[in-house]
Image (cartoon, rainbow, N blue to C red; front, side, top):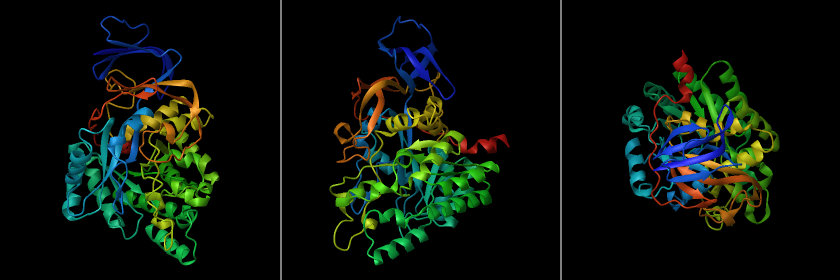
Length: 470
């Protein structure tokens, strides 16, 4: 199968240029002007359009279960496709009493194989750090899962990790090039403040932000950085939200330590005021870490431009508002009973383009970096995230002239609300190819269930770059 994309303005992390792209089967075979149409099966005219690599969302939740209710799963993975994302990386919690690889394989077999509509990878969340589990960490690299996450938050939950578990993971992971990621919040501070607020009758959704102030994120970020320094290993901080945590990352980065992080689109665009709404509407925006005040947003954009943060993820978590998000509403209930997270995988690319590129906060080159190229490097996806010969033909043909609004009416996420409801959208993915196959055409999903494949990552991702140079 040969496909030719003609006359598009190709965006890379370094430049932009008008050219054609020849795709043979699943790979990019040639890039150049006026490529021959001989033997081509399909021609896509990209005149007046931008062409960039399919997005890689390195932070999604399709397996999360809260009080018996499960988020929408990979049966809704056509949503990222429609939004220009061709690869997602799911966090899988290690099942208590089972191994790391066993936990991934169990979820993959039951909930992903034959269902996924985009390519996918996995981060394992270590929840049961028995000695034999620590010894298993290097095997993740061999299996194509070169990342591991630990939760510093959620005191009392089975997935909470203490400092001992983190430093063991860092030490053992470094042997095999495993990038250790942490959710950096001080669980004790959150637990103390939550109990205090509820005792004072402050149970509304706004108090979610009060219960997890920036200091608890900053303290945990600093502690994680020191643990990584002790282990002489890199560390990656997920969903960074605030200036105080950025200060810790920047300081470590500038003294030569390998510390990086991501943020999420909602932290760039929303502030804590959206939590303070009548009729429990604020529950739609309960996520952790919490949304911050507006003055934290510009430093996050700056950090993306400076490279201290190198990805914008969605932290997608698809719970219905009418049922699950109302768990905290009623007698004896509070913000602490609301499942955390928000559906956002479909609009990640659109939001960053509209409110980043179009408002001059990100260049088109940096846009490509944070939504695709850098997540590929972080996760060892050496055949994705770039438009270059030999790479997977995961490609977005993007119409910059489109004008519309985001919202649940045109969402494929499978839930009953959108945090982006009614927000302006400038530009949209018009055509999306997954390994050379058109899965979005005329801004409509046309792919097939089960089309996605496992994208195995290689160890020693970009968080190890400074170690390689040394």
